[in-house]
Amino acid sequence: MKESYQSLDDNSTFNMKQVIYRKLTSKILNLGLIVLLTFSTSLYAQDGDPAKGKSLFNTNCAACHKLDKKMTGPALRKVESRLADDHGLDREWLAAWIRNSAGLIKSGDAYANQIFNEYNGTAMTAFPTLSDQDINDLLAYTAQDKPAPVVPVAVPGGGGTQGEAGLPTKLVLGALALLFGLLALALILVRQTLNRFAEAKGVELTESQKNGSLWKSFVQNQFLVLVTAILLLLTSAYFAYGYFMQIGIDQGYQPVQPIQFSHRIHAGDNGIDCKYCHSSARVSKHSGIPSVNICMNCHKSISEVAPATATAEHSKEFYDGEIQKLYAAAGWDDAEQKYTGETKPIKWIKIHNLPDFVYFNHSQHVMVGGIQCQTCHGPIEEMEIVHQESPLTMGWCINCHRETNVKVEDNAYYTKIHEQLSKKYGVDKLTVAQQGGLECGKCHY
Amino acid sequence: MKGLIKITALVAILVSVTSCQDNARPNYQYFPNMYESVGYEAYIESDAFEGGVVAQIPVEGTIARGHSLFEIPNTLEGYEEAKANLKNPLDSTAVDFVRGKELYDIYCGICHGTKGNGKGKLVEREKILGIPSYDDAGRAITEGSIYHTIYYGKNAMGSYANQVNEEERWQITAYVLKLKADLEK
Image 1: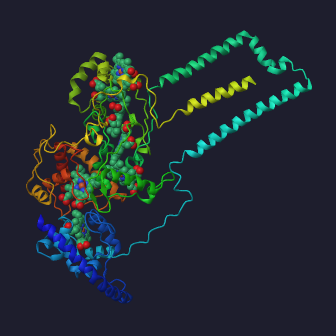
Image 2: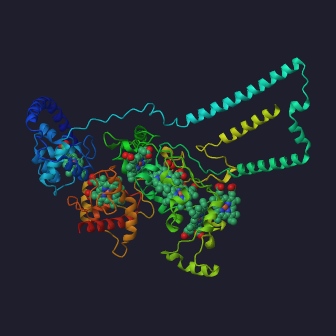
């Protein structure tokens, strides 16, 4: 252990000395390069095809290397010129390294061992099948210049739209309410002043003129009064009933989550299976919310979204910021590509929540019953932010148990009981209710 | 005059009642005495644990019921050892390709492709690149190395030990070997 630290130290001092020389040599080399470039456009990328190189790179190397960013292995842009300038290594060395880096390390090659130790002994895969031409293509691809960053066209006020999306409608509503209020006030004032004028001028206002004859005749007609009273009572009872019945029901509940995780992007556009993340739905009562390590399975490699992912509502910067929140929770340092160990739990807010006295089991419904998640949860894969689609009332559970048939195919457990019960009820297909899905004890502890 | 005031009052009440409906907040509950569990529910917060979360990883040196010890370490040497010596404990009658495929399609197919050629949906959409094909000669995967990779992950690939249990991992391993054989055909 001690030794390896020692050698790391040695490396760093070694590198520092090199920097001084490198500056000089690289300047000279650069000069030479420019001269050379005027004669042959591709010195390093001799007869390689960068387009082919790109596809080779994406299939073979991109798991560990990016062009401009450290990943499992070092950044590879201009690797050939870098190695040639700094360490005097040529293409032959590179080919040997790529075809079998472990062999090169074993042979005692100084630089191979240095870089291997620098990456804590992570082994690079051997690629014995790559031909010389393939390697030329690959290096031609890595030798390309970095494309100039595409400056996003600034949409005026585009950054500020998210979060304030609800504001304009609220403003409009408020303004309308204010307007109506003012109108009403104005009407009252006008009436008052008119009345005062009338009084001042001594005009006699008859009773009927004051309150309207319609109202008077209405009050006098007792039948009409009775009917309206009953109607009023009925409608208010209807609304009161509706109000009381929805107490404790959270249909439509859509809390603001600590990270705006989009099911539309994950489960919809990218088609990730629900059970990839909600894996305990297969085996347990709970569907579970994925732990951060599951997010990091993909997000170690995905640190930002593609420009095409941005929508009118949410910009790319917004989504990238959300991924940074995930990194903060996981304690992942993206620049260094390692965990810092400083984690903090993400406090997701639970949306679907049955009272504690009800027993609901996901694996029974999803695996045994073969019911799709969407039957109960709605089109989750289209939701940017999840909301509760179903009421989750007892009536909702019972209705489905009355209507749905038990899936008996390929389930040896059910063959016998199914035979007996279907004889008893005289049907070929049993509903859940007929099998006992309405017994209180099944759902209530 | 009075009617006007009444109407405005009614409108005001209606507006204030409907504006209380806010989907970002849970609804009122009626006597929720038995709604909240006394015992711990999954993922609940509690001061009894470090970090305030009930969902804890097993204490070091302990094994949960139904799990067994995997002694090969998460190192390069461990990987080589697994590659050379680790064998599938399931015999040919216990290997179930139907379940293997089901699990594989959920957990691996999204990157590795349902055929195992490294062209899953995420690769096709260029979100994650460089997924190897199972018949990659430089990797020469064996059942031991596959199991080691599922258990600990490897470089950019994460561990799947917490999503699939031991028996399921071996089912997937067997299925990956089948895909590899199909690819090499």
